[in-house]
Length: 194
Image 1 (cartoon, rainbow, N blue to C red):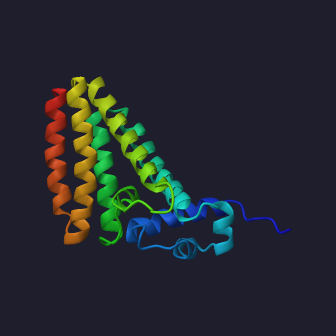
Image 2 (image 1 turned 180 degrees about the vertical axis):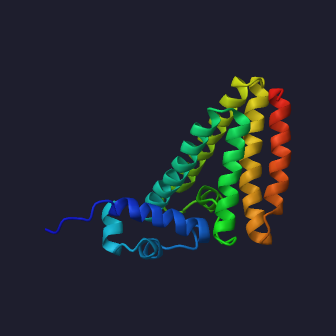
């Protein structure tokens, strides 16, 4: 039996995340996801026997973990630094892709749940959004915001950013994200007394 190339599973996940952030989940078949990563279809089913939902869920977790690591690192300097890093990451994603790519977590979250099984990918999106909210809320609380305000502001940050990324793609203009960035920064300063 031939040895599998190291990292092929990870390349499939990375490729799936990239295609989903461009096309969405409904617009991508397992064959498309495999082809985008350069993997044979058989390898894709070997690593993801439950099919598209399993692969999409893992792609969402992969993308979410990348953003989570940025947030964890930048939030050490406070919520304003974390917010800037979060928004800069999405700004760069939209611009680098010439408005063709957004967030794979959002792309999956807005899909209709599958009729033939559990919504693994949507559940993964909910987990990722929850993680980002908890990280932001904890940093806001640690820097002076009260608990309720911190939780609400964290939800607003994630929702406003994700929605604005979609607006930027649709309008092929970064201005909505820049406008939201200015307002979110003002809210974080106000909430933390900074």
